[in-house]
Length: 102
Image 1 (cartoon, one colour):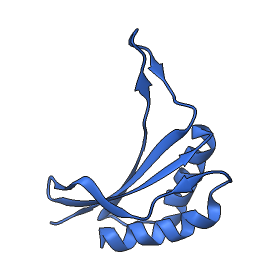
Image 2 (tube, rainbow, N blue to C red):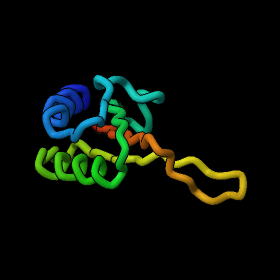
Image 3 (cartoon, rainbow, N blue to C red):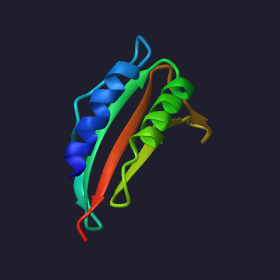
Image 4 (cartoon, rainbow, N blue to C red):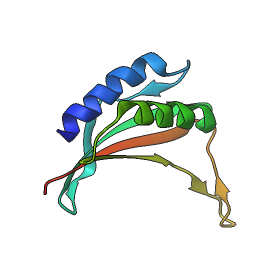
């Protein structure tokens, strides 16, 4: 079910992404199962984290995933040597869908 939901979100997202943003096909997360949940991800890259994040949040809200699915949007940031967070020029946004095995 998580894989199906991730593929459905990916298909919708492809039509919503502003150029020159790119995305991967849905795939199992690096840790494919944790805390009784199956995890899949889509990685989106683009020049504006703000625009991509808004697009992803809008898509997830409109999708109506139901009670057994949760979508998490994670923006990767890189710490500088001085400890401050630096957002790279080509942002990576990671959209993960989780499903509980309960």
